[in-house]
Length: 456
Figure 1 (spheres, one colour):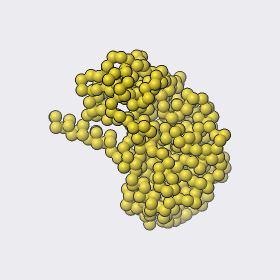
Figure 2 (tube, one colour):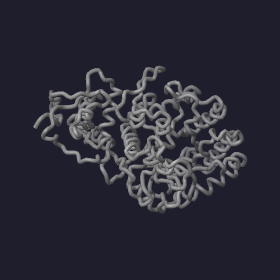
Figure 3 (cartoon, one colour):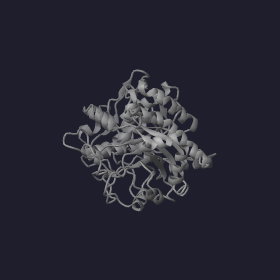
Figure 4 (cartoon, one colour):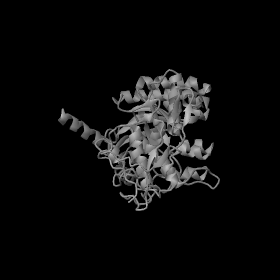
């Protein structure tokens, strides 16, 4: 039994610290004139923990460059392809023959998206042709003996929701429901995901209060209470994804899997834009990745992480619109990181903080930072996620670590919040965590779990 337990513990530790994350992908847009060669991009992706890449088209050079990398590839048929795909099954077969069969399985194509945000074009002809196009594409895949190996979907904007706040009240707009009913039945029948583009960035732009920013960036905040189910939400991403889940449930399709096809935060923008900055982009993407890696899930879908494709791999300098549209890239065209969100295999995760983390507190330090009494697990989880996302060493509270037991959110949060404080400037606000923490002169160290702090 002891041998089995040691094996299980070793497996859990290895799983937790694995370099690859099967649920983290990235969007590879090409509306640019300065992108590096696809071969260089393939090498870059292999140096990261990203396991999937989404293309908006089916560029054969890129698909071929990703051969034998084991990186999952999402390819797309454009909105302009939908009429012919819908009207002629041979058109779908030809599409598969041209864009899939020459490359598969060396290039690991896993999903084909038919159209992008079609419903919100409000073009009735295109909307009516979407499901037949997807059905013909699926039939062509089946005809090539790839059924079950390559799925078919389409991507929606959050505007398909008529109601999303609170998340438990999520509903699709009535005008879209007739089309969605057929699409959702297709997803259910074929086991394909409902793909959606949630952007907390846009939610913040429409409500730019400081507390909204913290809620959007996975930073400590007071949370938002959902009166419909009694759940307190601690970040906007979970709230948006759960509102989609509620909308699916309301139509009788609660078991259809959700895929986040795009989400991200721009690091720069025009002077009149609210929210873009390197600090905010790093916080959103870095904390989102930490949240996904934690496998905590969302309140309505706990214990798993939805497949999430970050937007975007590179800036797209030819995109129209405000400056932020051209500033979502995680990497620059010279392959250097725009900012570090901890996805490079050559760097430790979480990302290195701006100032060196020292294992010992400053000589002038006094006291320890601990949670206040009566704080909810949801708030403590938010503080725990935030602290461990700021570059401190949270390995002692991982399985096998000196501070893993007791395995409670309160105990783990206490260790992380204190370690964050001890490695900060130790101003009072460094031990605030949205008024959920306080300084104490009582050393919380126990057994072999040493809390740095106190006076030296």
